Length: 358
Image (cartoon, rainbow, N blue to C red; front, side, top):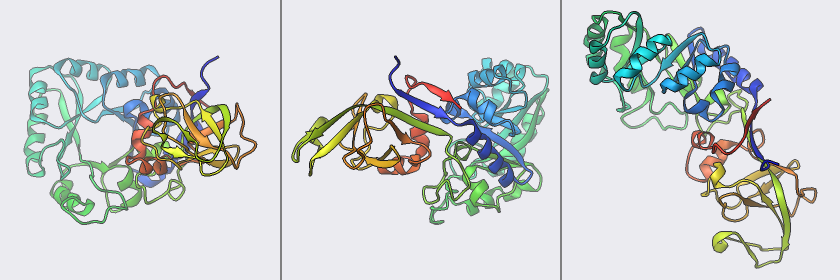
């Protein structure tokens, strides 16, 4: 039989979350961001779950090919545009709209022939990754529109600190980025709001929004819960207990003797480890959910196993299913315990873990 671990994707939750973002978008074009294999949820699942979206946003040509093969007939946005000359013809064939963020991409557009290529101009409003400066945008748009068969349909930017937990101080805030964009907004349509800006900053306008992490039921801001935002977690990572043993006070478990029993303890070994995407840096005491109760992590996470304390859960036994994250265990809470963000945990689930949908 296969190893007893799986990721379950809840299609109803995906549908619920896209409806929540549709409401928050208030009539604006809604792009569903499905890069990184839909944040680990499976691109084909996203195509099914996000039927209400106006378009999909991704970063790889092969992802666009997969989306079309899965039956997606609406718009597709390439967030980072094309990477070489060979991509451009395939994007046109697939009717995909690339973002243009750098001078070298414009030069490639000039070297190639086009029939009806719609592009989006990336504006650097302060995040300082990709894009042209606001005072360059008008001239760049004119230059691109002069290329036969190419048309700029809008400008896009990205907020660096749209989370509510950000203190609003420093050089890059939503207000300061909006101020930099303001001279362009009277003349050009703009797609600016990401997940956090859409839900937490209603003052951000524009003609479109990009829903990312929220579509998978995870809050973009660790200071606000998914429940408070009206979201449902769409991924459950779970595995079975494969052994139960009892140890005495003073005995240790796992590598490095990190966890030492302070009482007679009943330990359960779970078929999930860091090679499955559960972080080795997860500290002792981090919660799991088994038989309707919290069971804390006890000891270092191994490659293929982890151990939990089920002393107070007598019904936990071999074969009991353990939720590592999902409906009862917040992926954001786990991520904060090991110094990262929920995005990383979702995207890092290993390919050896079977993915199923309900």
